[in-house]
Each structure stands twice: as structure tokens, then as C-alpha cells.
Image (cartoon, rainbow, N blue to C red; front, side, top):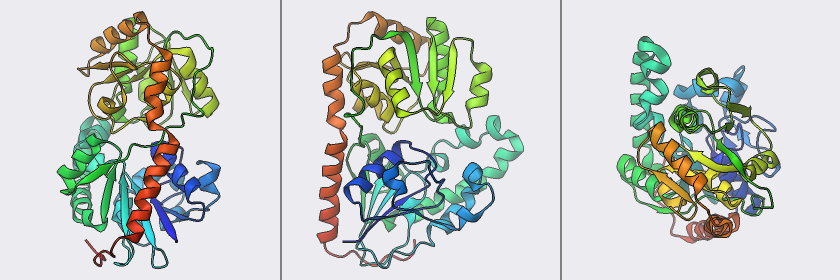
Length: 372
């Protein structure tokens, strides 16, 4: 059985890449397709398969500026050929779900989210505060066109699998498609408790992009008088660093071993943005540490209030500061937090996705799909 995995771009090990890593481990003979690949940026399991890239890979400095190529993504993703495969699985948060494949080849989309910036988060990415009035005005018709294309190509996948019930709702709203839910994998074998004693400090592990709302975490920790460590990088780093005080450390990208040690040493991990799922908070819980998260989106499915953390009703620094203080005062049961996280293990994900792939391969061949 020849399987193709399609990912939007491979430039680091974020949540979507961790999904792909498990799939490539379970199906080591599969082939990987992506718009842009930065060699060495993803796991050896993925690198070993030597991902196929699009024409965008040949553009100068594309590894750094691939996001600026957004208007070219529809053309690039449609150029791949899947004639020789028995199944295509896209892992999509942008355009991978819009591949073109022969009608006899089933296509299952593991949807991380419908394209955020084309639908409900334009202002966060391309609003006047980000690009200026003129730049924002120029981007609006571009993203409106992307949204139309995104909706028009929604039926190129035979089946949608969502990372959370929250994302399944977004798929229903924007694509008018139903989706089952398979939670993403958390490496609960690597992330586990030890005898490290947590100190009175907070941690954020996140890409530094607008919708993550890292600014709320910074303001909340200042109000609570708590040191904050931020792991991750992205276009927001310079702006956030300018607004942060001396008790905020920016570590950038660090090793998984360092992240694990930070989870163990931090009394609480913060999730201030509305996430589609959120891997980092579950990694923290796998290490036996509680999470303070915004009570919206995927956090409603991954954080168990009073067992593994707390949910904050309002996106307000003062509310987060109060929740942080309360978490410090509460005696959480490390074993109970760990048990909650183990429900999201890599083995569970691999088994559920393997069953879906086998089912799709043996189902009746889908109708021909060649365009929108």
C-alpha cells in the first residue's frame, strides 16, 4: 500500500509536525510532500523520507520568507501528482487539504484547523496594527480570494478528521463538512515527572504569533509578580521583548530535553490564547504540572479544572494573574495530572489513525475529484 502524507510546510517541529512524525513512524514506507522544507528542521523520522517540495523551494530565502509567498500556495499545492498512490493523507492548517488527486485515490484530511487568517483572524495577522492602513487594505482582497479558494476546494477531501471538537465545529462552519475527532499525539513517554521541585515561576511554550496572545501572559505575570520564561520563536518576538520587563526571559528555540526540564521546574504553564488544541499544555501535564489556560477552544478538552489546572473565563491579564496565584496556592496531585495527560499518548493516536487509514483504503473508491 503506497501512502502519501502532505503537510503545508516543514520548517520546525510544531504540533502539525509532531502529528506527521507519528504517522511516518507507523508508516515508514510512505512518501512526504510539502510546499517548503528546511533541511534539518524536523525529526529524523521525517527527514529520512526526504520530503518532496514544490517550486517554492527554489525561491531565494524561502526558508525565512515562505509566509510572504501565501498568494502562491494554491498553485503550488495543486502541482503535486499522486497517480501512483493508494491513499493520500493531508495534515493541513493552510492548503494541504486542497491537493488534487485521481478519483480512485482516497484522500483523508487530518485538519489542524481551517485557515485562520483567511476566515476569522484577519486583523490579528494583517490588520492595520500589523501592516499599517495601506498594507492591511491591500491584503484584504488577497485573503478574501484565499477564503473563497479554501471553501471551494473543501470537497477535495473525502473525509475530515479534526484535532478537537472545537475544530470540528470550525470545519462545519466554514467547509459545511462533518468531521470525526482524533486528538493529536503527546509524547507522554518522553514528558514525564521526576523528583524536580517546582519553583514559583511560570512558563509559556509557544510559537510567537499574534493569536497566541503571549502579551496577556506577560502582563498577567507582571501583575502577579511572577517570573516568566518564554520558549519559542516567531514574528512577534521583537515586539513582545520590547513590552516585557526584566522578569521575562525569551529562550527562543531550545531542545526537547530543556523544555522538559522547564516544565518540571515551573509551577504552572500558561496558555493565554484560544487554541485549536494545544500540545504544550499537555506536555506540561504529562510532567505532572498544572496549566492555567483560557477557557475557550481546545483547552476545554485538554485541561481538567481542579484536577490538572484552571480555566480562565476572560482574556484579561488580571483574571490570569488571579488564576496563577490560585494555582500556586493549590496542592495539585501530580499522579492525577499525569493520568489525565496519558489519555493523549502517541500510541493511542497511532492506533486510531492506522485504523482510519486501513478503513479508507478498503472503502469503496470515491468519485473523481480533479478541481474545486
